[in-house]
Amino acid sequence: LINGISYIFSSISELWINVPRVQRKKAKVTFKEDFIEGLKFILKDEGLVRLLGICFFINFLFGMIRVSMIPWFVNSSHLGMERYGILNAFQSVGLIIGMISLSVVKIKSQDKYRLYLISVFIFIIGIGLEAVLNNFILILIFAVLSFGFQFVFNTLLNSTLMLKTPMEK
Image (tube, rainbow, N blue to C red):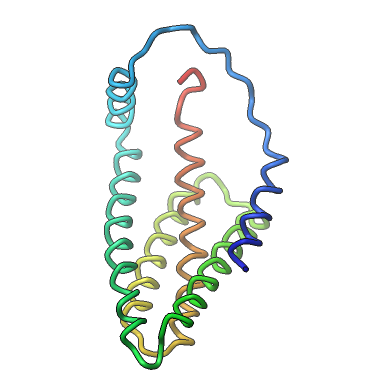
């Protein structure tokens, strides 16, 4: 229910997003050419390479932990599938808190990379603790914390990529 409400809130908030129109050249570019040009663009920028490297690491780590949590919840008498559903709802709450936090707090340009690294670090530590704790309340607290910071670093990453990509691309 909370997850569904968050999607509705997200879709409504998109009504106020202004995307500038870009005049594109009518050039025939194949997918392969565009893909290679994109890779060259990324590889020229050390910052983008670092950001994407961190993303690959996080996705790999997060995927393994998420897959291992389902059997852990199913096979634990003090957890169960009902509590796994509650955990997913609390993860959505964390995302909403992250979204609200970024809406309210103004982040200076020079502080964005530091906040990105801190958010990634807190997310990794929180997810790691979430996966080894046996106290359901602590698992929920770390889920909210982790997913709030996940929203922060994902938003900072995506906005940085958008700003660094030339308008004609």
